[in-house]
Each structure stands twice: as structure tokens, then as C-alpha cells.
Image (tube, rainbow, N blue to C red):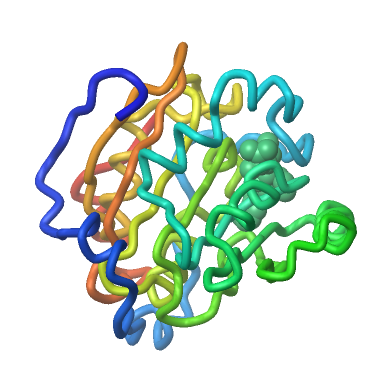
Length: 247
Ligand SMILES: C[S@@+](CC[C@H](N)C(=O)[O-])C[C@H]1O[C@@H](n2cnc3c(N)ncnc32)[C@H](O)[C@@H]1O
């Protein structure tokens, strides 16, 4: 495994094995679907959306970023992967050949201009197994019971409605699906998310911490398994009242 030390917590899911075998029925969303109340906003700054990519693609390839993340998350041929906050498509262009024609990449973003450029890239590079999906700040709008690996790369700190988005991602996940979040250990106002804050917010949304991989200077990939059902806004509020998540 690439990257630095790995700290594991009880995951409760044999995601590695099942990722290799494919998906099953997915996670129902009765609570979230019936709860129309807004999810609480995070009690910390949300970073502004400033660009559709983190850094230059050649620099990232030279640093081995994509290969390292794909290996850590067990992404292989035939898998269905969602790139939430895909931006200009650094991951999308590399995921498409990796998962191959039997697999699918769901490339999600919320900025229409970024999405238009991404669609052009998908057409230009003939990435026939990529679906570009326009989400909202609180809903990735991914197909139900489908996603084996969901990626959030350099974007978690920009999500205006993280609890809503995390709740509405649950029904899109295949059984034993995995969420991988890559971010910097900086404060959220500086385009990072400190790992304890990330774990607190994911726990409030019902996601189970799996592992934290240190992947570079101040950079990490954290992985989480989805809850069996999506939490309601009231459930998230109650968890945050019992255990507040502050920067
Ligand atoms: C810094 S860019 C990173 C893009 C890409 N993941 C990368 O690593 O190059 C952050 C992206 O996340 C998108 N974003 C922000 N909030 C989002 C949300 N709630 N849902 C989906 N995408 C979002 C932004 O529009 C932007 O394209």
C-alpha cells in the first residue's frame, strides 16, 4: 500500500472483498426521503468554490496522485465510481480507462460552467463510460444502489450542505460501497478539512470511519462506509447536539 501509516478503526464492513465481487441491493433512504426539513449547516467556515481543479494534471501525475488513490480505494476494472466535485476531470479522465467499458464513472459537480467544460472533455477524449451529472450543494443526484466507490477529492471543505449531501449519497451507494475523501489538514477556510473535524461530521451523518491514510505533506485520504439507511435531518441535529463538530 502506498502512502504513510494507516490507522484503522472498526469498519464493520468487508468492503474490500465485496468491492471485488460487485454490488448488491444498496441502501434505502426512507428517513431522508420523508424528512423535508433542511439539514443543519456545518458549524465552521465553508470554503468558496474558486477553481475546477486542485493543481496541474502533469504535476499530480508526477506525484503519483491518481495511482495512489485508486490503489488505496481498490478501484478496478468493471467498477462503478462516482467523482463528486469532479471539476475539470483530472480523476474522470483516468478513472474511465481504469474501470473500462464494463464499468462506469459518474462525474458530478454543481457549477454549470465547469460541467459544460467537463462534458466537452468527455466528448473530446471519447470517454464513453462516463455520465456527467449536475448535482446541488446538498444532493449529488446519483442513481440509486449503484456506486461502489465515491470520491470527494479536494472538495469536502467547499460543500455548502455537507450533511444533506452525505445523507442523500447513502441511497446511491451499493452494498459495501466506500467513500474516499482526499483533503488537506488545513482549516476549512484555507481549503482543507482537519481529520478530527471530518470524522466528527461524517459520524453525525451516520457514516462509519474505516481508515486514514497519510498520502503526502498535510494531505490524507479518509475512508468511510455508509449507514444502512440515510439519516433524517432530525437525526443529524440530535447527533450534533450530543457531540458538536467545530473547527
Ligand atoms: C478544488 S476543485 C477540485 C476538483 C477535482 N476534484 C480535483 O481534484 O481536481 C472543487 C470542486 O468541487 C466542486 N464542488 C463544490 N461543492 C460541491 C458540491 N456540493 N457538490 C459537488 N461538487 C461541488 C466545485 O465546483 C469544484 O469543481
